[in-house]
Length: 136
Image (tube, rainbow, N blue to C red; front, side, top):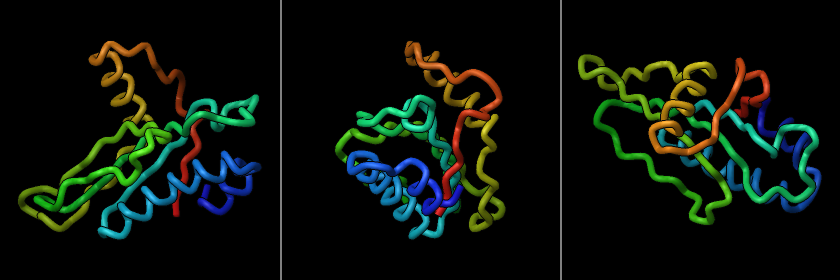
């Protein structure tokens, strides 16, 4: 779902519009570097019944960037975006050829594995059909 459609579907009040704006700024900053990104929003922000005043927006980011490029730093310092991310680097042999970003299934597996290793009880079940892919 492109960001405009996501905004129309889920940005029905000021709080939600603010959170979507924070997400848009993250995606803009990543794309401005020439990197690829896949974003999957999940949790109470997109799950029925939709919260009127969500405290945050949860997303998985798959980022693909050239080998030996700058490090990725989050733009948001508010803590209102909960981001689990995976950064893929290009191969040493082809340093500027971006690898395809992870699929939703790969991102879910990485998310669940990371949460388990950190001792967190958060877990995404199923095939990812309850996640919304958002792009610019």
